[in-house]
Length: 466
Image (cartoon, rainbow, N blue to C red; front, top):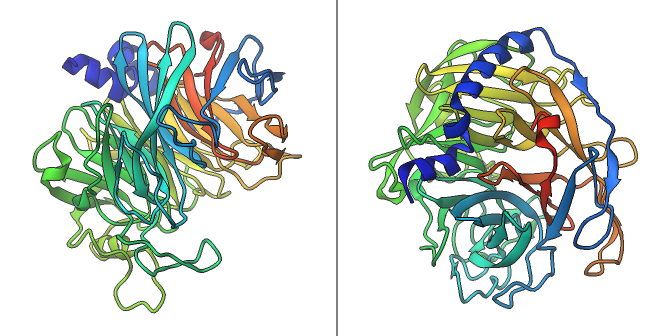
């Protein structure tokens, strides 16, 4: 794969739109400082081309096809795991695309058997699956497991060299107590809290990249110019990190994990004006393998963060999505801001400057953005994972335009009565995850985590902010 093609996949279309994005994002900061209102276009229930069910509410003219429901048999005979989360397009072979999708399964027990992949911990039930899609016909072509034996695979990110980095959102190990799951004692055989690399084809090594740290990982993105990897942490407090590899493109060869110090701001969890800018310093974590603060009676998952904080590292409120595009790093703090409704941040590696692009003024406007991606038209997709009930606010997906306008794009409309794989219930409160576009900009791939469905959405994109 040529360098331009690799970077095209990694940067999500900025090779083709770099001039437009550079210009429009310059206007973004000034417009956001004025506080652009959110717009709410009319959404209508749209039937799935696969099942015929009205699973999503979308603007007029859009259509979609579901695939890879939890429990569907894959090509390797494995039943599709549950809890679909982060996802990315890692390969484009003409019209045939390869995507890798995370499964945020945290339970212990026999790992998923897979002849085409690899297993890390025989007693962990998370992992990643590969999927194949024809971008011309709009047909899903198949799927199989790629990596198993990991735990709570949350987000991650695509690399410029065509692999997927999958990140574990846990630091549990053998006989540790899982306080998120009724204090269950986990019978893992290996430690967790790592990042793994999964190739677009073939068998992964199933070995963690230990230099990237053992903490409650969320998303990962790679600067295609420098090879530096940026990482987020889904905790409160949490840090914003980067991994500086000794050999760009070969992350397993080692490197330094560093935490960001936002100059003059120890705590970024409160409210700031849109357009606020800060300088950044970086501090190297002495021991990236420490899972919890030494000396604590109850493991706190903050071993890496507390080392960084002692060096001057700043704290954020639950950092989630992270994406590299147009030579900039975009990430969000899902519960950050004065209303604890979310913040969208932009980091410029060249100037080492951090800017607040958008802070939600109220939860009905935007409530707790999670996964995000940069779009081929220069905007940002924001996937909600909020705390509202379905009858009032179903989970939503938004577009944030380069001009600073926030616009509703989709709502979760998933109510099932056993029509597919026996799932029954109102799933409209379940989060969106894994948003990513096809290289031609025609298809938006995205998941609803529960009951676990992957969608390919297409339509008149020029009529949206996506």
